[in-house]
Amino acid sequence: MGAILKLLVKDKRLSFYVALALLLVVMALVADKIAPHDIYKVDYAKILEPPSKEFIFGTDYMGRCVFSRILCGTATTFKMTFSAVAIVFVLGTSLGILSGYFGGFLNSAVMRVADIFLAFPGIILAIAIAGIMGGGLQNAVIAIAAVTWPRYARLSRSLVIKEKESVYVDAAKVSGTGSFKILGRHIFPNVISIMILSAVMDIGVVTMELAGLSYLGLGAQPPEPEWGLMLAGGKTYFQVAPWLLLAPALAIFVVIVIWNLLGDKLRDILDPRALKAIEKEEL
Image 1: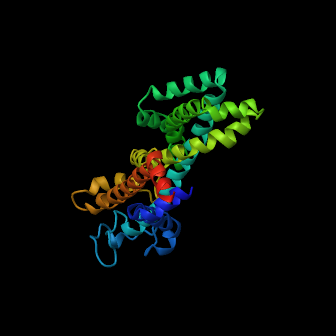
Image 2: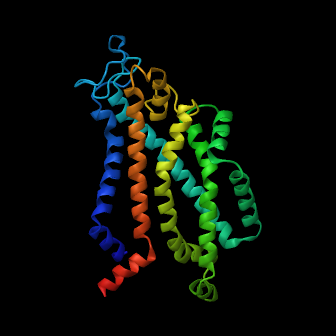
Image 3: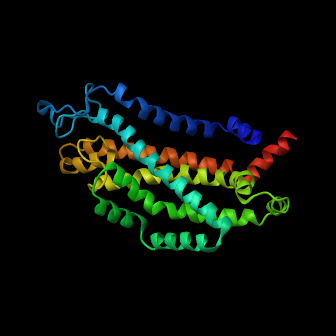
């Protein structure tokens, strides 16, 4: 742990990425308080106004402030994204750990169900599930979680299978330690860091997938300030009001880039070779 903290302090690039990610989270938490205009107020006298001092990103086809809706859309997008990632992380990791350690019927059942979901292209299956369930934020989250958890289950299962063959696990079994204590004390700590890394790297992907569902009308519904929904609403006016597409597209792009950069950097930090190098410096 000390090696990780030391590496965090020394790596300025990581600190920058973490600061950007925290800035996005803070922005999502206070968006409704710092938004300069009411995101639901319709003003037909200000329809499709270009960017100006009053409206930084212009107004939309109902006279609403695009900048304010982008800000508040951060909260909507993050709520959907973090909910989906949390469900996938808990469900997939738990099933993978249990099936990998105990094997037998549980392992066969979980892996066969995972194979069924993995047999279809993820986004296509998510569209089908969301379409059957109907539009809405909750249904979009469930659809994305349903097609993503098998990857976490397979990854955690493979990690557990490797760990349970280790000498320290055999020693714990010989000493009479119960299965769940072995999982909690020995195997889980060695698996969780990789699973957290996967979750961080998936934040950008899930953000894009949820925006895609909203763009198709299967996610957020009007008048919700969601970036994918804003893209769908602005495509008709692209030639006369390109800011309606450029603003939400830029927001999605920035969020994906920040989380991907942070995930890549965390992957480097969690590399055992990097940690060992820091430990040697301490010695």
